[in-house]
Length: 127
Image 1 (cartoon, rainbow, N blue to C red):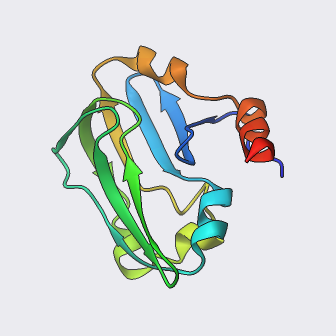
Image 2: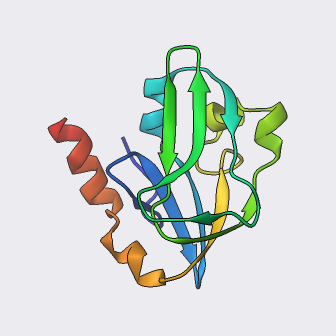
């Protein structure tokens, strides 16, 4: 399928781009394809504390509602407000314009547990 190799991935089908203590995230191309046309995104509040494995956002499509879980603990410092009026950006460009939030990480080492692109593709093949 060819997922970007400069990103990390979760088993919950989220992608992660870390830059120092900041982590940008969204859902993978696989996840958006499985969900179908995305019609609504409930974003977290800027300043919200998030905990690894806890709820971060909700993505609603014509077929299903999916939870986006926080892959790390920290504080939400930025959200993609464009998704409120253009949630389809996730379908059109999941790794670019479809990003969901930026988290200031409490422990950047938590990203090390995420999958590489190669590991993520193996996960999808095994499913």
